[in-house]
Length: 147
Image 1 (cartoon, rainbow, N blue to C red):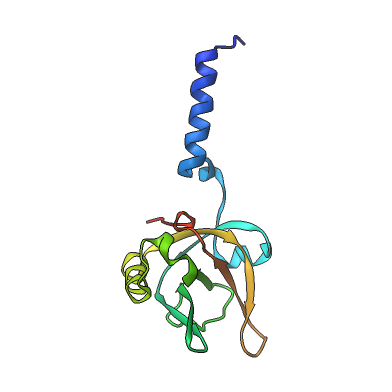
Image 2: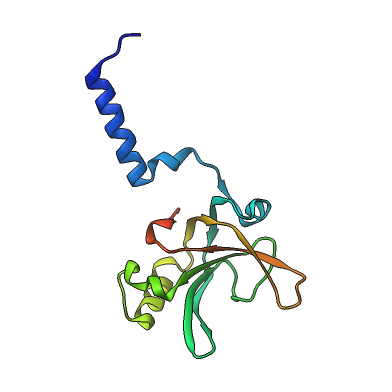
């Protein structure tokens, strides 16, 4: 096979652009929350439809925003994914006002199927019986709307 410097340069440029735009991950398997459970500690992409969103407080201080594919944030099933966005990352999401960001997140993602990329953590319920998948998001690029 003949090597063409111009072709190699174009392919190298495409590879860089693809990695910057997320195209490179197009072949990566998109998992359900149930499938992601088996990959605790691994970085994966999970797909789910957001049914509720809100803000979690620890004591009197806001701790993180959440998106969940269940009607209630305290739902712990094998099919639940809990997406947590620390309030310290609010600026990255284009909003410093935490109440406005909570509303914007709800409007943007409610009843939409999203893909979220991050490291799988399993969170136990208060009784320690059931667990759900949790993914912490520190960059808006980790969440995309699938449909």
